[in-house]
Image (cartoon, rainbow, N blue to C red):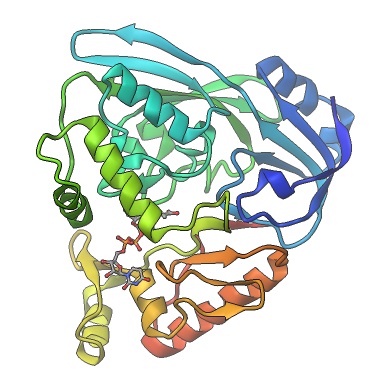
Length: 337
Ligand code: EPU
């Protein structure tokens, strides 16, 4: 059940060619428990892997990788208004989105085509085009890696924030998220507040809103801006959009009047990191077989054969240059191993 020296190339969307000294792929909860109670797991550094779409390997993993491959989609409550649906952590996120659209359930259409698996969706509160997972999240089941017990976390227990949850912070490395329960509405309540969606619907000539039409618009936007990880290795946004105080923003704006920014609560402003990186001259820059994507400067790409170290070093250079030019400290969104 535990294999040795397994290539992780096909298990990370950056397509970095590293291997793990030990590796196991869990199909169900019992499988997880067997692995975590093994000597190999107890005596080695461990990494729980989902779709591998939010990490960068900079070296071989000298420990055990446990990949969550738990499947299944099960309706556990069905009313006139909503459904509660329990989904295995190993289900591919976009497959689940398409399933919901087919069933007539609303809430995840704006999150179409986000790479990765269901288990990671609450981990970093995935979000796109005006919607975050916390809006449809009901509860999750997670296996405690020390005891093997299943613990339940409701929405407030997850402490969701922008690309944040308790599983990236206080409880980091302590759980495998085995199943997630979402609450989806049977009534349409569309969110097209994000300008790009409305524009895209117009371009596509779509007059009647539906979960399907919004999903189609989101897919079209993503395909036009973001590289397909099946073709070009990447992990989506490599950096988070930084949040700065109003006074820092005012200074930046006085030097760069076209800075792209959104207010987020009292006295705080979120800056578009993609804009900062583009303005600093990085967009589309290519160094051999890696670089900064030409359509979205937040995305670093591996054109094939780059090492994680090279991409990491590029991200360091970008961090330094943004700090120097704008006085803003960017943070990485991807996890580095
Ligand atoms: N912009 C630029 N240059 C760029 C990229 C963006 O000037 O190269 C400016 C544009 O003016 C644009 C603004 O930044 O109006 C926002 O760009 P975009 O709509 O592409 O969104 P983003 O803030 O760059 C975030 C998420 C994406 C998500 C989109 C859409 C983060 C770190 N990224 O990007 O998420 O798809 O919004 O909601 O929050 C991901 O997390 O992996 C990801 C792709």
